Image (cartoon, rainbow, N blue to C red; front, side, top):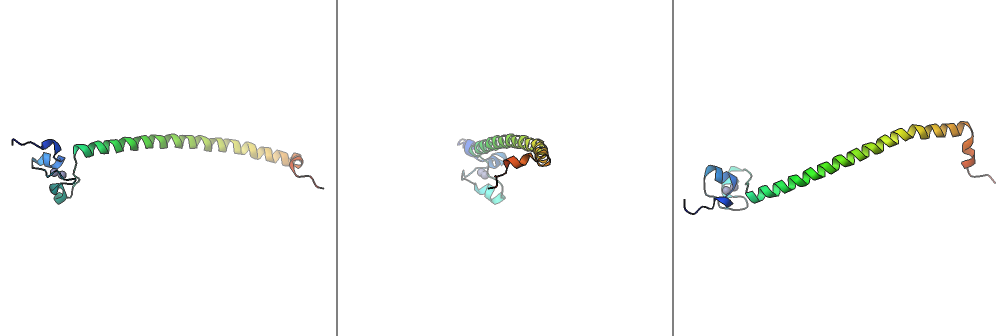
Length: 101
Ligand SMILES: [Zn+2]
Ligand SMILES: [Zn+2]
């Protein structure tokens, strides 16, 4: 084995120690119906996973912000409802109504 092109061979060919045709999906993997992994592809996958992790983290942040807003809304709603009730009961609301001509 003088002519070693092992660095570009896919992971499966490397594992079974067979020659890889170095196609995008090599014949051996195609025949086996398995994903043809290469170092280059692995790097791509790692990049995608990193992006995914970042987006997931951002999503968690948004969810937390959203939760805060929902909490705020839930906390202020009874106050506002109470205020409206009080205004109605004391006839205070009338000053906000358009005046009759
Ligand atoms: Zn291969
Ligand atoms: Zn392969």
